[in-house]
Length: 292
Image (tube, rainbow, N blue to C red; front, side, top):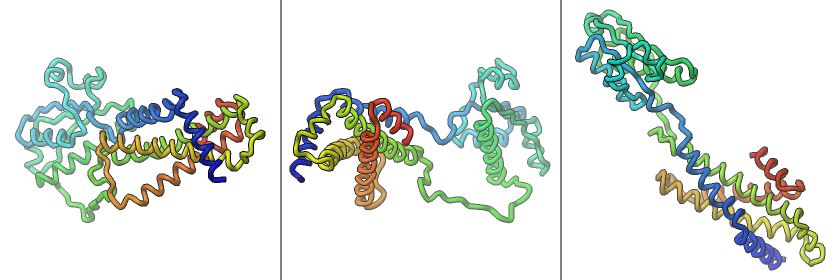
């Protein structure tokens, strides 16, 4: 029985290698998915165009401006654009997403112990981005006041938050492993489902009835072949992720290897189930996409 399963596996791999479209679906599309989503998805808004008009022009106001841009979340608008366009119209013209107006008595009021109002105008066309900009400016202002010891009141309870996973907030550490799971679920199951349905469409599945191959041997042989294909996909995408995004193992590799193998096996046999239950390739693709 094991010999017939291995023979069926070798037959499937030989057919897989001869089909260029299937090869592209197995390796080129996963690589494109990894590159596109790996570089396109961002968890935080960055390079926000921020315009600042400093009417005080004092060392304290300049230190405040430096603190705003030290967060690396904001990108300063060029002074030439600030001088040519009235500050309040910067947002309407699309030159900036936010505008900070520092009043003339900024440093004098703060050093005298009086509160001072700094006007902030935020582009509200995107509500989520506007909320992020508002919270970031508020947090940066509070940090600036504490750093310069001009905080008028101290909080009795201060929460000190520590990120245990990805403390450096490196986006690739959160995005790329998720892409691994997405790729290794969709493409092995999709390949398995298409291979099984293709046998039905071409009528080659009827040849099994004339042979000594049982249904279990046929399914196990096909599943083993595409399990090896899925393992090859995992090696390729993980190697590419390690080269481009410098991902490294943080612990013993055995749980990752065993978990990846079980995950790919689950994906392959899910595609096998879809291939058995559907009658054409379009239905198989839609079923895999729906469950993914």
